[in-house]
Image 1 (cartoon, rainbow, N blue to C red):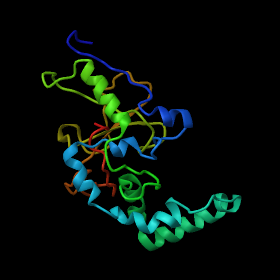
Image 2: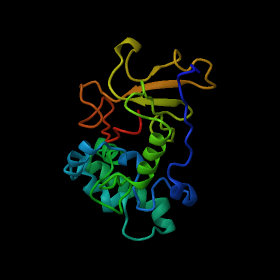
Image 3: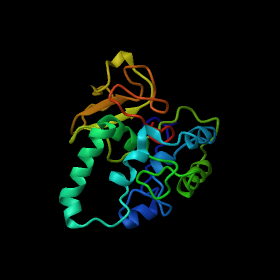
Image 4: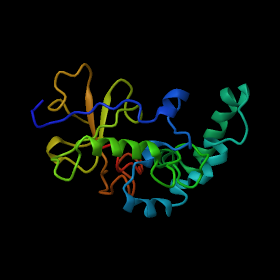
Length: 212
């Protein structure tokens, strides 16, 4: 790497989740959906029922009692099919990706304020010299999520017309990688971006700070 470039490898930004084998914090907050700038919180908290999350909530996302074996292997699929027929498959995907900022016990809860894990990480980076004088900063959040099985997918904001459409293989950046890497841009075919609308694949995301 160039002499004026620093690389930080940060493991376990969510120590509670690591200990409990969960993706959420001790407050049931999904840090990926919690990574927002201060001026983004009012808009996110005012969204309410994103992509009909409320309609899928009790039926599919957050059952009010522990599932039985019949629920796990049969009932959940019936409920999923009925919910998809009634409210739409795209709405189900969008509501999962966008999560919720109103149901504190719900799946993919984004919280109502920045969590301690992010604040600790911010303090660490500031102590290590991350200031306004630092040049370009690239943050890569590595985790499982969207994309084909067995293919690393780099999610990024905006578009890159010089490298084709969504899903173009990015070998020029990841040459020599042990497996294919595809590049997925947050702005869809209809021109709307991740934070405000629907992309070309019908997904809506509120991830604006962490997955860059």
